Image: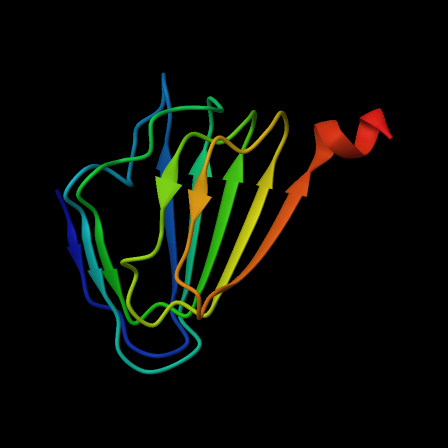
Length: 114
């Protein structure tokens, strides 16, 4: 469990997945201040269960990248989130965001099938 409190124009990187030294783990707390804060989350195994109990506020953009399909992930409690960009291959299991968050989904497997 980590607590991170960056200020404006910050980029926070988190990794999780089987066989990795995870830096984005259950109960992590990220409370940023200022604007233009970005959280990059990478699931290196693809389809790994999203860390539960994370608390995020003050981050305006989340980039969630999965090497395979994404597991169910709920970003609706991420206070201040305005943009969620999901990049994956193999199908999104269930991405949830608040109605005030613009969501972009890029699935390379779907693109290859067309």
